[in-house]
View 1: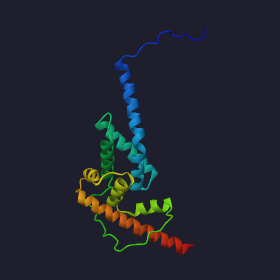
View 2: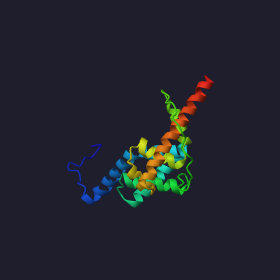
View 3: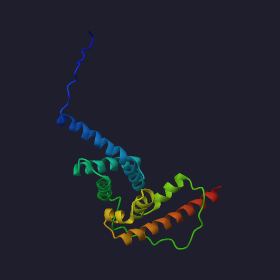
Length: 178
């Protein structure tokens, strides 16, 4: 016979199965959070290579803290990475918001939106990404960034106003070029 088959496959003990199950659960955790972590990292750095490095570093930190980290642990690990590399600067002075209402332009292209997001100061950018893109509550963002909830709401409003102004200016330069 070419192949020998064992009619009764050896049963694995719970101890032998546990590492494989943990590895599978960790892979599932990574797969379910990697897109969010990469997206925030990319918008904060503007570089795919840096975003990959932040992704890797955030998950290494999170898995060192807990074998099966939850969303909050992963987010905290990412923000620590951003702080450690001075991408997110807590002491960064925020410029005053743009005054007045700017007309809203329809048909904004994705690359225009990405460019406008990259123009936001780092604190505004991370708060905008966490609240308006990822759907975090102001309370959760305030816990992650160690800021008061009212300060987070104020910065979020400023970021939205600045983003609207930036998109309007991109639209104006686009119309002039046409």
